[in-house]
Length: 389
Ligand code: AN7
Image (tube, rainbow, N blue to C red; front, side, top):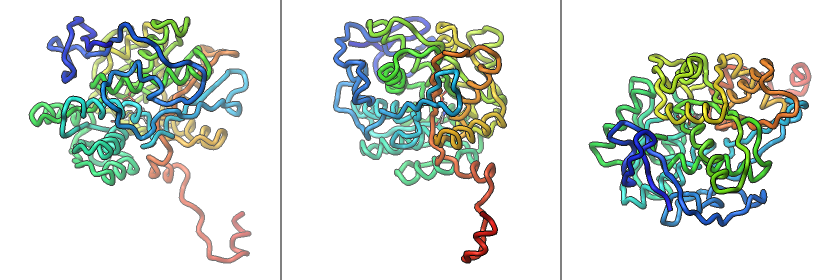
C-alpha cells in the first residue's frame, strides 16, 4: 500500500497530480509492505524490488537496472571506491529506471501521450519507453545545447522533438504549460513516480555491497539524489539495513544553485539565471527537486561540492583510461567530487564510497573529439603507419 503525499503540508493527492496546491512537491509513501525480495546480490534489476514500486499493472520494461558496480582499484587503493555504471542501462542512462515506472504509470492512468523538457537523457529514455508502450511522445530541448547522441535517440525512437531558443529551465516551464493544456503526462522528475524507479539504485548498491559510507552523484534537476536517499531510507524503515550513507551532490561551477544553498545552510535555492557548463546534462539553473535534494543532503549529514569543467573532463579521462569506464561529462562529475573530498581529507582511508556514473560516453561524442582530437590520418601504407606508432 502507498499514498501520494505533499512533502510540505502532508495533504494526500490523486495519482494524476505532480504538485500540491501549496506548491509543494509530492512523494510516494509506502505502508504495510510485505517485502518479498532478498538482498542476496542476485538477479539485480529494477523490478526485483516491485513490492516497493507503486504500479498496479504489468510494467513497460526494457530490462533496466542490474548495472555493474565496479571496484576501482586503479584510481584508489586506500579508499574502497566503486563506480556504478548507469550508462549501461537500455538507453544509456539512469533515467531508464524512472521511465519504466513513469511510462507504466502513464498507461495505468489511461494517458495517450507523454512529454518532457530535457537536457537530453530524459528525452532519449522517454522516447524509448513510450515507443515500447505505444504512447505518443513530445520533447522540448534547449536548441544547440543537447549532446548529439541523445537527440539522435529521441528522434529515432519516434518522439516529436522541439528545440526551443531558450535553456532547460525555460523548456521545463513551457512543457508544464503544454501538459496542463493538452492533457499529456509529464515525465520530468517532478513526477514522483519516476523517482520511485530511480531509488532502486540504492537497493542495488545495498544488495551487492551493503551500505557504503558515501554515495556521490551529479546534481542537475536534483531528482536522482532525492530518489536514491529515499531508497536507502525505505530499506532502513522496513528493517533491511541499520545504517545510512552520507549523500554527496556534485554540481558544475557554472550551474550551482544547490551548492550555493548548501553553503548558506539554506533549505531553498536562488535560481542561477544563465547556467553554463560543458556537462550539458546538468546545465540547469532552477532545479525543480531542490527542496527534496537539500533535505536528503542535510538529513544524511552529507554535503554538496562544486567542480570546474576542467576537473570534470579530467575525471572523464581517468575513468576511461584507468578503469575502462566510458561516461559522459556530467557523470564524471561524481568522480571529480570524490577527488575533491579526498584532497580535503573528508573522505579517508578505509571509507567505502560509491560514485554513480549516470550516463554513457557515447551520448556525447562531440565533446570527446574536442578533448581527444581526431584520429591521425595516414595513407594506406605500412611504412606510413610505422611512422606514427
Ligand atoms: C547524465 O535529461 O535533467 O539531478 O533532462 O543526464 O536527477 O536531474 C538529466 C540529468 C546527471 C542529473 N547525469 O540528474 C535531463 C536531465 C546525467 C544526466 C543528471 C542528468 P538529476
